[in-house]
Length: 346
Ligand SMILES: [Zn+2]
Ligand SMILES: [Zn+2]
Image 1: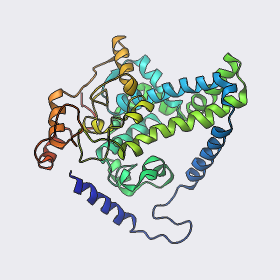
Image 2: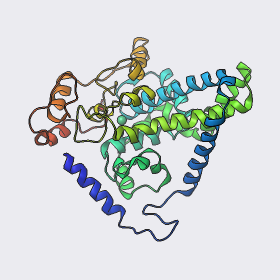
Image 3: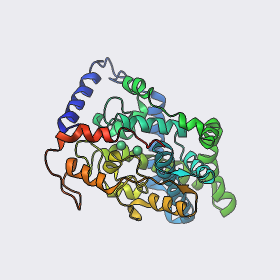
Image 4: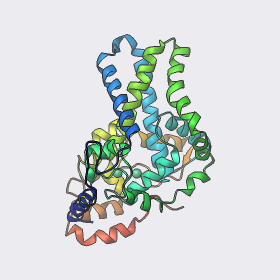
């Protein structure tokens, strides 16, 4: 895929989107899911109000609790649903899978298998109409707008062909999926409030505010920023023909997901980056620690010669070691054929 292909995709998207003409104030090119529109809007407005008015210095303990909870939740997304379950970039023993599943369900996001299915569709059809959060439809759409609209027909038809049978085959995923209806409110909204109140003597109302209206939208928006900002701002050191970027700040706040250009080039690498430096990629260090403890194993990494080859063929010239050479577009098909899977078959 070349830069002009990306442009053509954008044109196609616009053509398809404008096929249905708006016919009034509440008719849009894409039908909106109104409960989600109001739900997200009200939740964010309340959050904004508390962000401005909350007496932070009075409740330092609750803020520390919110930071600790959000760190483990972000870790469970990066190390759990993303690198472990979706891309199968490493394997994990049952206790670790249970720990990651508990932390992930507490984020208040979707079922594990749903997250995995949508992310596999994203990788397989990145930045096309079949991508659930196609970044060619704009920053707002790719960030949160896609959650407020009906899915594009291509997402449904092409997404139906995505295999995620391995999710129901994992008893941990099957259990948390089956009991999702009760586990999500319990782990995501009740326990994070009850624990500091019962065990650390904190007040109930500020505990609810910090957990429901600060920590929850923070974690969700932080992860959404990979779909939006990490497909718009940053370097394309490995493959300039795709939109995902390298962004150190996003990596820091997500525990290691901002090296997104590399990740789309080598989705099955457990580091989701070429390097695994601690602060910008804490998730990688956690996986290495679990590996040392015998909880994680079979960690997969892209070999250096493959990384060098893709940088030389398709990089944008920002890689610190290797320099692109020749006409990158001439090699595109060959490189895509080399990595047809979003995860390593094993
Ligand atoms: Zn992406
Ligand atoms: Zn991924």
